[in-house]
Picture (cartoon, rainbow, N blue to C red):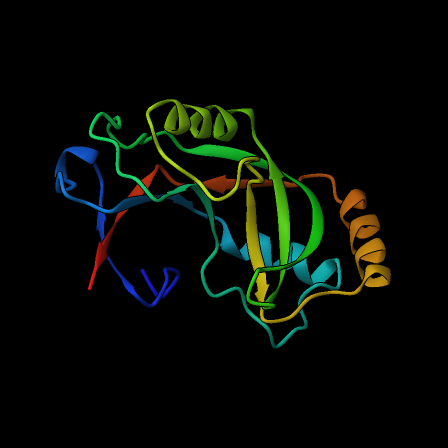
Length: 172
């Protein structure tokens, strides 16, 4: 599962919340991109990725919660289609830059609401489903305008996502 979590946290992947220990410190639920080749072609067509660059870990976070609610439902096995909406550049609180592809999916938003209603706690009050395409690099505003125009020219902009996977957040 890689090193997507804070270095002070450990992780272990589970497919159902019933397997999560009751003393879990938090929950990370996500869906893997199951058509990563298409995602890379879109990023290259739009000029976001160079021909020698790759997307290491295409996924959309369902929730990254500081709390593991006891009553969280079993991970949703449904495959989901998300529509590639637009490109954005973000900078996190540590100053690290990211280029993301925002995706639109009523289903993903519904699942996020479910997690919040179940008691999850997020640092981000507004859910912004996305796939991180570049980490440590951002695209400037002129490049974003060109990339978003190129994206608008694509007919099929659907990204396929796996069923939900859970990672438990534990102290090391």
